[in-house]
Image 1 (cartoon, rainbow, N blue to C red):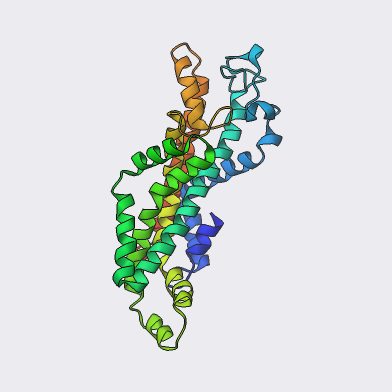
Image 2: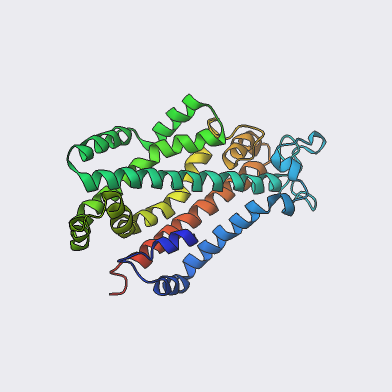
Length: 295
């Protein structure tokens, strides 16, 4: 989040003090940011927090399978006797890795392609945008499922599959910004002085075009978490015995009607809360970067 907020303070955006002040005023945003920070901390410290770290990584304990929540296993155990809370903590690692991995790579690819197309125009724009349109022709979730099924289930392949379906939206977004910015006087002045194109793009155009990208990226983190959980639920995401919330929901759904609700229920709540927190932060970032907000 620090990188996102710092990215909002380039030329043409609000100063850091004003941005942070408005963020502090938004109580809902602070709650969401606190939730995200909590998830990040527990994900990083998962092996230290839980006494069942091995179970969190997937080691079974069959004599204690399907135990209800108790003083030792606060959220009970799953069908292999593993502590559900430990699985949730390690699952947070997987969810955050996929979310930040997908959004980071998608932003880089999208910004490079979109900025190149928008700046140079003509045949370069035509070729790059037709390639982008080919990816946009597929519904994002369907394309992610196709790629994941082709590559095979794993956390790495999940990141690749979702990235393939995600980067075109950033390419389109940044291209629209660059088409406007390339006509600005400071860009024309830099070109007239003989500044190389790559420096004009990197130093004068992209910093001024990134605000809507940061807003979209922040909100997309929650969407990626939901898509990743969906892929794991249908067997195309993280493979057992890896810890993944979607995988936990799939493994626990058959036990819900038998009364063992805590496996799928705990994972479902974890996914929902984190995705909602990212969506709220996306709304807050949009609000604090909206030039009309102070009017």
